[in-house]
Length: 610
Image (cartoon, rainbow, N blue to C red):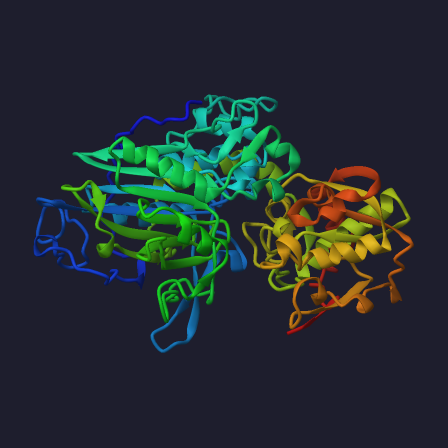
């Protein structure tokens, strides 16, 4: 596609009845106090425009623009289960509470209510709208999610790494429409694709050196112009299967954004927002934590900090994602001026409402007046009827497959923690599958990022408490990886464990989930590879022999060296097995029943020293 994008007129918003219940709201970043606007631009009330009435911006020189944003939806149309469907909220007395959140029926209601009274409203997203999706969407290659986003009136999104799970050709189909190339049409209507642009400024075709999709998009209304540049993290090839990024090059996020910011400026677009599928790590897991305490951006760390500090001051705000965290911070730009950086957690549990004050005289955003807050997508509001109809329609197609029982559990099996009960369960399932294929299989390793949701005891439908359905198992492992077997020396196995906390994984460790029989100590008081205590590594009680050969089961993503585990890519004598979900299902069925359900593993294989 061309490297330039035409401007786009905002669609007419669908009318909705006025709601009696307002969204839960906690302001997490106030106005930047570096300077004040002229008296003619002063705001009243909440500082947002009010359709030409009262004291809000909207007359004369200054115009408030509402930017609603979210990220990392991952096809979660129905309310996510367990901890994936809750957010943590700091109370006025300093205590914390959890709030049930998420579900596209509620997200639609909250967004539509938030838009009321805001004639200048844009809805944008920070990538990973699809991929690693629950069965309701994943079974149909995420067509249901694109339909839902169309109905949500999403205006624009960046690509994320998961948009490449099925490759660039499938991403192009989600953008442009058409039935699936092998499975065909799921309904009597041809899939029409997204009516919002996916932006991929830093994703280039290797042959043409041009972006595979539009690099930017310009929103226009009544003389007001706002440009959006969309990028995904440069490290996407390391966290996506090799087939998904074949023929593509991923460029530096800062260099790319700065390049297109100059291009937009040359076109007279001076108000610019960057949509960046890369993020940070706030000091608190509470969505309303003040990450500007004690100073601007002091409460957030991670890749987004360096990115934000180096993106040109021509960019007025950053909408980010990828880490599934919630924050609204002001990180200084290269000129030392605070700039708003936001992220709305994941799975549709939050949305961000940002007010950008547009100066008609300069065509730029008055950044000292930017206000932003994350809001909970609570479930105490009416469901959006059109979203309910959409979910019901696709559920009718998915139900015969998704409702089939595959196992039974005694309690929630969670994926939280350095070592998780669910991680142990999946690793044990892959070890059992590996031993069926080759009795010499010694152990299994599972990447934590491949575990997308917990197994919950409470029924998700009519199946009854404690029953694990195929849909629930699919939500846990939706990637359709295969279980592969490879040989490694003991020295290589030790190196694999050290790669969890060194190299590209040093700043944000990726601790592999391990099968029964493998034990070791992880000393987090040390740094780098030394955090894995070599002398503590045991397999079935015996030290790992550096010169011996070990047969290891892992999913195809890890076996290919994904997530920074380059040594896993160096294994020999590879055997490619069946789908990892099939191995998980087989293990659940073989090891549990209604009369003898499976208890959560103890998660005591890794001894963590803090």
